[in-house]
Image (cartoon, rainbow, N blue to C red; front, side):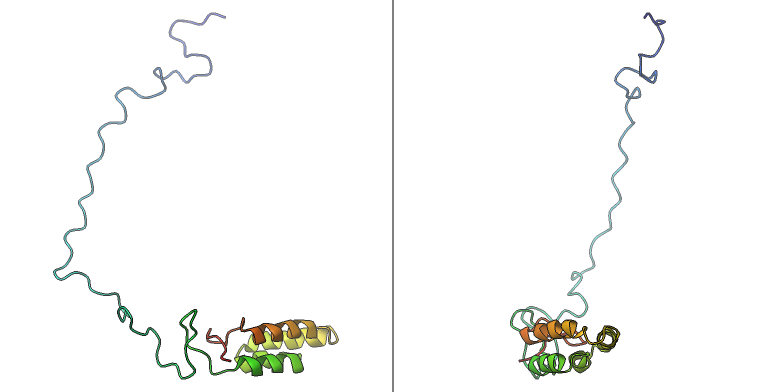
Length: 142
């Protein structure tokens, strides 16, 4: 199959050899002007930063969790767990302040004719092991 001398190659677009435009893309753009010099004295510490070693939280009357550094809740995990297991319709969740979750557990308990106690039982065990926080996100105290 012979093609005319100025015809594009088979499967090509007729551009210059190599597929790049002649002369490249032109000169690179100039670098940005920058943001200027920082203010005298620097920027300072971010707002709300107390500095190294300073407490980030307010007073913690029940102590501070050694792992997370969060203050402990005023709610006890033993009381919450016993309430949740003994009264299997969200009593422990009402105690910790999770009202919406407690209402959901009541609904599941009554809609399943009492089989929802399984959810409350597992939730009570999680409360006793310390995996549940109060409504403000603080870990339950011992």
